[in-house]
Image 1 (cartoon, rainbow, N blue to C red):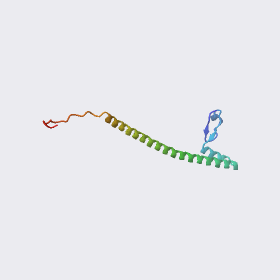
Image 2: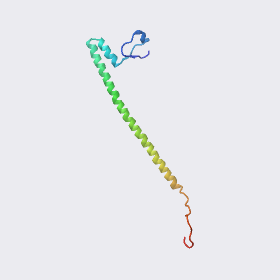
Image 3: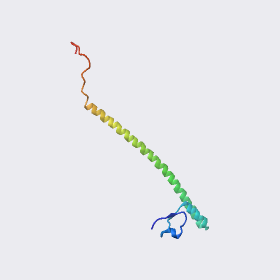
Image 4: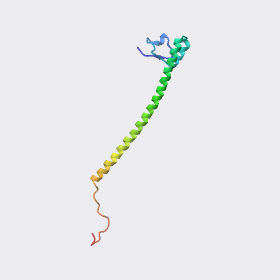
Amino acid sequence: MAKISQNVIPSRQHLGGSHPFAFTETGVAMLSSVLKSQRAREMNIAIMRAFVALRKLLVEQTDLRLEIENIKKKLDNHDKNIELVFQYLDELLEKKENPKPEKPPVGYKLKGKS
C-alpha cells in the first residue's frame, strides 16, 4: 500500500486504493474547522502543538548540523596544515641526510696561502 500525505482526505478517485497515513499542519487546521466536537478540538490542539514542537526540533537540529559542519571544515583545514608540516619536515630530513656536495670556492688561489 502506498503512503499518501494530503492536506485533507482526498476523494476516492485520488486515493488509488490506499488511505492517507498523515495530515499536514494545514490539513489538521482545515479538518478542525469541519469537526465541532470537544474531543476534536482537544485533538486539534494536541496535533498543532506536536507540529510546533517538530518545527522547533528541526530548527534546533539545523543549527546543530551547521555547527558540526563548521567544525568538520576546521578539522579538514587542520589536517591539511598538519600534512604540510610533516611534508616540510620530511624534506628537511632528506636535505640533512643527503647534503649537497661542497662546491670549490670561486676565485683565485694565492700561492703560499691555503
